[in-house]
Length: 178
Ligand code: GRF
Image (tube, rainbow, N blue to C red):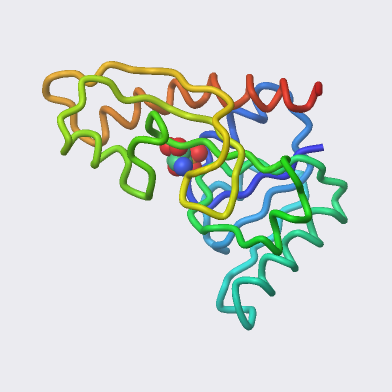
């Protein structure tokens, strides 16, 4: 059973739902994340940092909530906070992230802009296991996309997201079957 962590729009969450994967819970670090509306009748909860003494306490509460929903695999789908070991130790080798670059190149929150600024000919998307670093951890799958003349952050991100919406459900499906 899958728990999805979100912060933003949630198009990757939608791709997991559309693929029929067993998403049972959606957690967010922001109460107002639009992605939460996609959860419909599934369990959903917000874990805002400001409601806890520190990051570790928040992550412990979020891990406990996910466990109570029966979650065994956690997917970060546009979740914009780092997870501490407090969280990761509760789901060993079972936390995956989708990132809009060909990691290990261009980690971080501005990967699409950074790829354009660097003038690369190829961008892409990566699905990887999560550790405590920024977009580090073993790579599970990657797919490339050409950068076109005149690409803006919006047009390039849109083409990368088309890849993400195929790649993430495929890899998550494979992990569910293991
Ligand atoms: C995706 O591009 C993902 O790679 C990055 O954040 C974006 C989230 O988009 N980590 P969405 O919320 O799934 O629409």
